[in-house]
Image 1 (cartoon, rainbow, N blue to C red):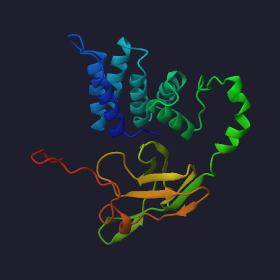
Image 2: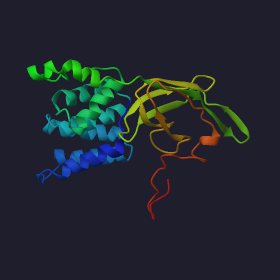
Image 3: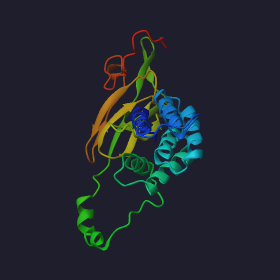
Image 4: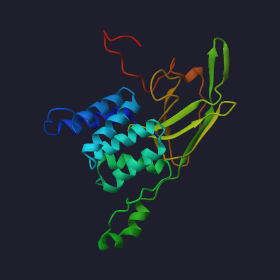
Length: 248
């Protein structure tokens, strides 16, 4: 249910660069940039505080509401995320990047945002039956399997109650998140067809980072094990650390 931070940070920084030079002292522009940078570092709590501060002076700024929704989703603050993304969908242009991403996130958690119904002209209404047939949604897919890992050398055990996430790629919207059962079994249901990243973390070292492509109606079986872990296969490798930077 979260949104990827790198894409949001690039978007926020680009929007900030297009604004006029700020007055002396903290401004909505500088706070937005700092917030995007905080998200890029994985510090969602700091980013949320910065976005809220920026909204005090610019309460109608759509990118700020969108950024706060992203940060809230990373902090599992569902109520705040729903409120901010609903605000973006209700006020943003339908084809705007933030509006599309916010709408997809709300749909992924089963929420139809208030105020999101577009005004339809008489001519458009006459074409609705044809459009509905053309835009019919494909059948959802699913992914199921079992997570096993050698937490102790030579001993492979089920990953009990381990968090797993399925993120839309390249938008990096976390459509679904769950925990495996006591035997390591997991099952992602009702997933829109597309390309996803299956992983066990949003930041830092990961046991798995696998590319999963789902077709309409497909029920994919995929076990997670040392054989397809990041030690052997990494479909989404982290950027190399710059030379001279301190090691973590």
